[in-house]
Image 1 (tube, rainbow, N blue to C red):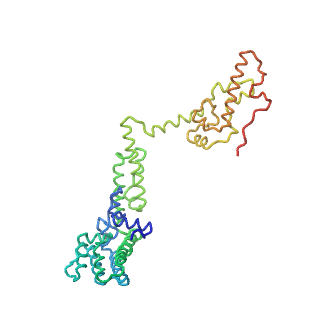
Image 2: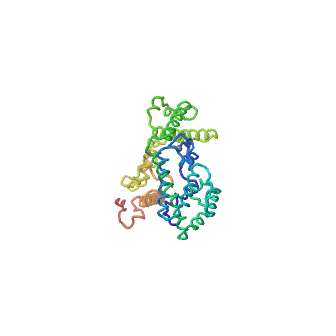
Image 3: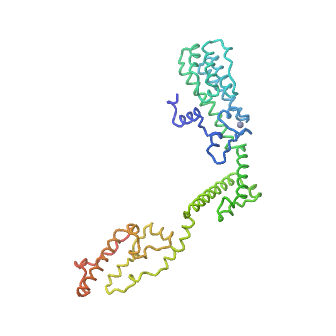
Amino acid sequence: MRRKQKFNEQVRTMKVMHGWLPVKHNLGKHTKDGITQCPGCPCEEETFLHMYECPHPLMQQAVTDALEQIHKLGCAAKIPRIVLDKFIQCIEAGINGSKVDSTTTGSLSLRKAVEHQNEIGNDKLLQGFLAKTWADAIGEWTKDKTQHKITFLLRQLWDTLFTRVWDTRNFILHHTPNCYRATEGLNLAERLRWYRENKNEVLAQSDRRLAEHDEAEIERMGRLTKRKWVRQLDKLRDIYRQECKQLEKGQSSVRQFLTVLPNVATVREVPRTAKSNVKRPNRRFKQSTLSFKTAPQSEHTSSLKQRTGIDVSKLPLSQMSQWMQKKLPKWIRDRVKKSENRKVYTYQAKVEGVGEATPPPPNQGGSPPRGPPEPD
Ligand SMILES: [Zn+2]
């Protein structure tokens, strides 16, 4: 039957069969607050089975309506009345946690079906585990499409009974004032009080002011606000715990790293190196210290400026790391290479006594050096 279902229906029935539904019993295991309160009643453990036996009027109504509908649709689908009644009795027994008396039934195959279902567990019937002998019981009264009728019963368990109960439960949980919300609110208020009393032990000094909620403020807060505060304080506590561990090992923490920032910012005020300030006779040599004023600033350059306060565009290339240099546009790197070559050439020329007027080799063709390409 599951093969004919849509994907989302397959996922849902799989969760029903294996008990993976997000009922509070399952969710409580994986959340920090660990609340397993039923939204509909004071019961503290909302399991899959509890949804069917919850005393909330809407839940009770949902189960009753669903069983009536199954009976009605079963009759319309020509399932033998005697089998249908026993089947519904088994469902009710599963909800109540009891067993169905099979001795009262006259038919042998039906008695076997009820016995087998008792062995499997009537509560398992709610999850979709039917005894195979239900087919024999139906077959005894009618030979017409027995397997289809079994599939029909199974579909009613999932599509009619479970869907109604689940939708009602979700309606109570998300759209009405309920026991779960009340319990969660109390729990969160308790945790905020705990943080207020233990902030000196579990939070860093700079974060302790965030845990100073007085009683009136906690009362005034909504549930969702409390939840956000608790999440925030949990994060800060984890960070502080991690920092304490690192300090014990002698490692530096992020805060220590961040104190370096003012020193980095002072780099900006360091004057340019003497080498780049030397006046050179040849005008072209001024280009050996890069002037990036016309160069389009890359995103990296601007973000680096924001983070460190260093304007990369004003740094000479010799002060840049290899990594920074690679980030530069290609035309700038080529230009630097050319200017460095010229520098070497002129130095050799001076040693050999050649006049400075000799044009450098890269420009022998007479064409002026190309300027930077226009940015797009
Ligand atoms: Zn309940």
